[in-house]
Length: 138
Image (tube, rainbow, N blue to C red; front, side, top):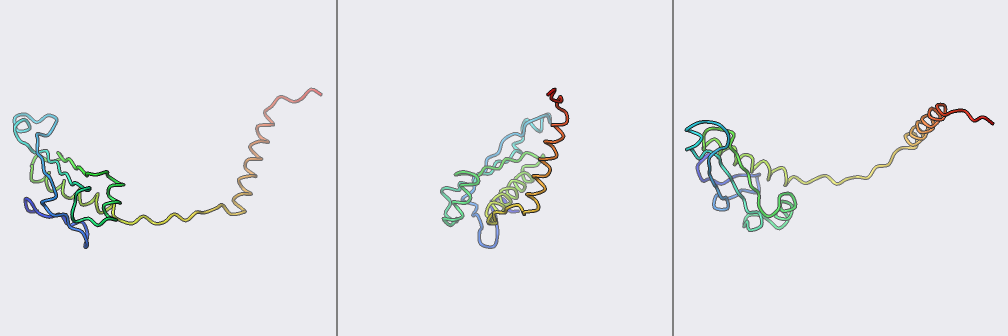
């Protein structure tokens, strides 16, 4: 992956590099001198609300999923370049998953036999509990 390259999401959408904001900082946790001086943690920000490459439908879907901006932070590797690659992959993956159309929900209803089984089970449970009660002294 080139340093400031576009990120291809799918065949119809590619996010240009100029719409991405990179920030770098030190990774957290132990690591000694290297961790304290190297800015290996990569943060990638994509402004969904102001993007020029998104259609209105894509923008609406992505804003519903993530809000006006999508932020990915990676500090998995010790190398800034590797963290940059992982951040770009994660951003592309999140956008790709959010843009897949969700199937419409088809309402279902239980079959007559399923209703009967449920009522029979309720009746058996009620009888079992009734048998535990103290008998009436009429």
